[in-house]
Amino acid sequence: MKFLLAVSSQEFSESTLRMGSKVAKSFGAQLAVVYVGPKPKELYAGRVSLARDTLAKWEIYHPGIEVLRWAFDDLKTSGFLEDSDDNGFNPLNMVEEKNRYRMALPGSYGQDIDLILREGDIIDELRRECSEDEYTVSIIGGSKGRIMAHDLIQYLPTSVLVMKNVYLDRHYKILLCVDDSSATDRAVRFGATIAKQMSFPVTIMTVSKTEEFGPGYKEAAESASQHLESQHVDHEQKFITGDPVNTFIETAGEDHLIVMGSSSKSALAKFFLGSKPMKTLEKANCPILVVKEK
Image (cartoon, rainbow, N blue to C red; front, side, top):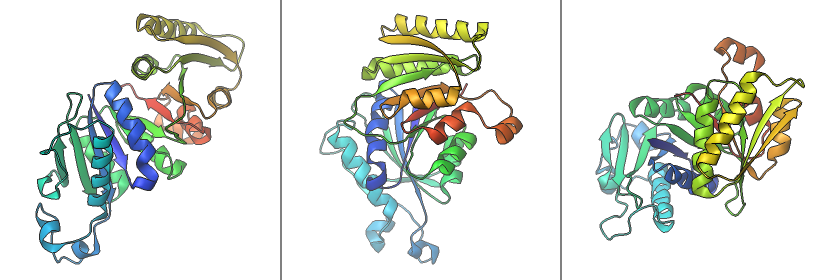
């Protein structure tokens, strides 16, 4: 299992990196920290191409290198990288491959951590990164507005964790939104893993617009409860009548991580009618993990 974690700067990505790396560790996953940005003007001018020795020889300031250096320092300080004299940040150790530049580092919990630099449009480059490697989850910040997050959830083949309004000193709980969609089972497994490893209590919530809860809803809720019990995760279960999106938002507030499966609607229906995950993302004031079937 491998997670992609996109960073833009220390100012806007610190909470994303800190909490995202903890989530990746809870799955025992490999982690790739990815920066996507424009080329420096020297590279656009054709004076030099970005190679392993470019920065050292030409002394070109590249914002991506500086962001990855910060990410390296933060991960090492937080204990996610092995602490040794040989395990330092050196741009000359970046290897050019697949139209990107990568530095592989030994992680402290048995999985490698990659630092990756890509140049170009953010959405296009993250899609390329996902297509060239087998990622399970992409972790992105929530500070660039709903359009960026909306497009990434739509176009990335992975599940997507949007770190919206994250505060590192906040004690989070998980709101596990359960219905009869095909991705719910996987969302339950993901939510249970995070809850168990990070000691988050869970509320299983099933919402129906009518007082009748169909058999699919009841079976999904019961299955979720059984799985959490098998993992010894503290949880409660709620069945509520009302508008699903508004109920999720009101319940979650700012101190929950919302976990829900992706919509089973067709692409055309999503375009015209929207979907519960997209509408929830737009209105939520907390992090949200949208889990896809694969």
